[in-house]
Image (cartoon, rainbow, N blue to C red):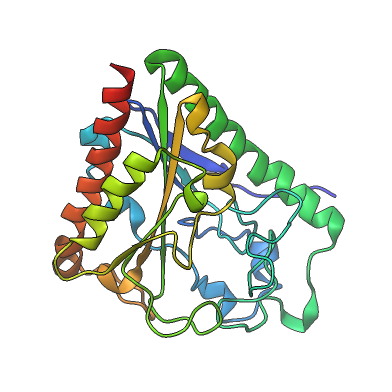
Length: 272
């Protein structure tokens, strides 16, 4: 089976400093033939990490490379292992090619879910190119600078009973429980998150980093990786029409920037 899409699998901007920012869940494109199989709710792609490019609009100024997904996570989830193995065994999760929304409602009308061949075709068309570019850019950065950092940028509704109780902390840092980056860097970032006035922060709480953080973070080989899962209420409307709220975002954006600057300072000091 082939997978037909008119959109490239990613957008990419190369920077000048030893940091790559990955945004695997900002994509909203669903090819029309696939969208026709979706429910009306799923066609709204409500579980998108909306507006992160705008929230991180300082990335170019700081010299970071930026890799951005184009397709919806409902087409294929770039932050899942290619074999679809669960990231959080024993907990509720969505899969490589999800069949249900975060609200546990069906994505596919009439149960027309993808089979193994269709999943493989989507993986070849979108997942593989994204990860090939991610790996290529980290290798280029490391070859040029002697060290590389990866920041995996995410956001999620602040209240999602399927995945966690109550309201999620605003700034959820994940380092694969300490395996994906140097402890000193993790502690610096934790301090920024926990001391961000008006916001709550946690390190390796409910979200410890997905496939990207866990797979690419190799601090012993000079590749530092961190995931930030933010509450969407920190910068946008959490319900339709999912608008960006500039005045709200202006509160949290400096703290996010401070964390990115801390990553750059850490790796550049290590390199030196």
